[in-house]
Length: 167
Image (cartoon, rainbow, N blue to C red; front, side, top):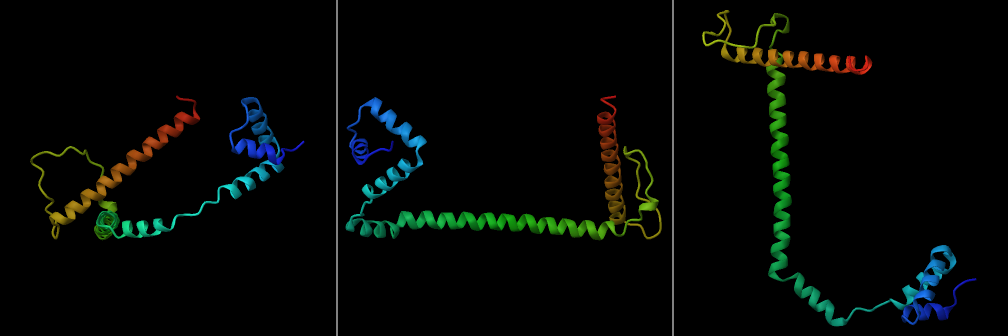
């Protein structure tokens, strides 16, 4: 049995008692036909028209100085976010290019595993044609190589522990 129009009007006018309202809402929960009718009925009764004077107030508020200031602050913050993003991207590109050009000149076959502790008496190598820049780039290459070895050893230990049950 479906809900009749009088029940819809009583519900909208708050003329139902608690038990009837619970039964009404339970029926709407179970019956999609009555729910569709109820929604249609609500849409018809809730169609409101906006007052004519409100348009003028909205347009006046939109041109007010505080709204313009808030809009410009929002635009400025977006521009700053874009600027910071561009700076980070440019810094990443510069760092990548530096590493690309410095690592391409490193001879990885001549890098030997030595202790990472350096003494105060450490002097730059006396090879002909060597410079501080090449020593620096070799140090970077050595650091990358050592880090990769440590990471590989860590992954190997971790996977062995997983495969062997924690041993």
